[in-house]
Structure formats: C-alpha cells, structure tokens
Image (tube, rainbow, N blue to C red; front, side):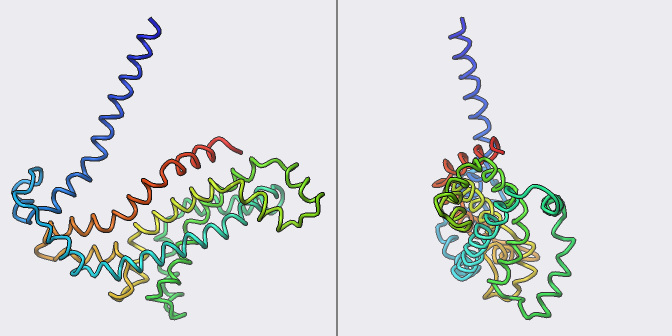
Length: 277
C-alpha cells in the first residue's frame, strides 16, 4: 500500500514538473521559431512553424545591431563586475561574520536597508557625478556601479558561509603561525568557494541582462552593451520581428550555455547558503 502510494506521489511529482517545464520552455521555443520566420509569417500566426527557415535573420541581426562589439562590451562589464564583487564582498562578508557587535551590527543593518532601495532613487545623482568626472561612456566605470548595486546581497549570502566555518579552525591556524590574512586567504576562502561561485553566477547574469543603468551611462554606439543594442532594433513605425528574435537568441545564448554548465554547482551553492548560519 505504501509502495503504491509512493509511486503515485512520484508520478504526480513528475507530471507537475513536466507541466512546469512546458510553461517555462514555451516562450523560449516561441522565440526560436519566430527567429526562423519572416515578419509577415509572425504577424499572420506566431504559433506556426516557418515555411522556410530564414537563417539570414541571424546574420542581419549580428550586423544591424553591431552585436560583435556590444557583446564584447557586455563581456568586459560582466567580467570586471564579477571580479570586483567576489574580491570585495568576500572580505566584507568575512568581517561581518567575525565581528557581530557594536558598529558592525549597524553596518549590517545599513547594508540590509540598501537592498530595499530602488536604483531609480540614486540613478540621477550617480549620472551627474559620473558626468562631472568624465566617466560617461566608460565601460569599466560602469562595472563599479554594478558592483555597488549587487554587493549587499552578495555580502549577506557569503556571510552565511563564513558563519558556518568554526572559529576553532582559524584559531588552530593562528597557533600554527598563520597570519590573519593567511587564515582568510588559505583556509576560509577555499571553504566558501561554493558561495563565491554562486555570487559570481547571480551577479554575472544580472549584469549581463541589465538595461536601465547601461543605457543611461553608455550612450555612444561603440560603448553600448548587447542588451541596449538589442533595443535599437525596434523601429518607431515598423519592426522586423524575425531579426529581433534572432538577436535575442544571440544575446541570451551565452548566459544560457554558461548557466547550464554551472547549474549543479549553482544549486549546491544556493542550498548550502540557505541552511548555513
């Protein structure tokens, strides 16, 4: 009886998961199908298969949106942002995990409060400040803005990993002659590598897909990211939807491939961070 009930529960779970997967994959499948159709076919019936695959949509999207340069800009911004976040947030999270009283508690409350503030609140002051410093259209300067935005969440996530490390491990290393920096760099940092990888994936994907900030601080065509260049494909009175869908696939593909390769470690890192500390 229990075995039958268990099989029924498993079967029901698989059915629910299959339905969820269909709902999740349907928009992506529709984009792929639309990328191989002409605009007339998409307008006539977006759910039908293409009469003749229009592979030229991809080459036109690559040329018209200047995706080669914009993808390079997105890669530069994302890579530098991830490096800055992993380096600075790991040290900040370690400090917050090992110092819990006094001013450190107020600092934690401040960082927690910043996660609730919308970016629109300080977007204009940031823009005028960057303009006075001559940092508009600077791809590398933009990464510092992203680092500031994604740091509070990253710090609190990494903090849970540092809290799970027993202090006795560090005390034993100090007794063996290790410095404070040596304890952090050689002992605690490798132990929280799953959390660092999780932070890198989350911040990297958010940076790659972000539009509002990049469109504000990167205004020249040569410096715009891929997401901003994708927006320029839409015309005021008419749009080539096949070309637009092809460009969307080209921009999403790197993120999708990277996430599929790292999904197991990402899930392990999120699960580990949720139960520790």
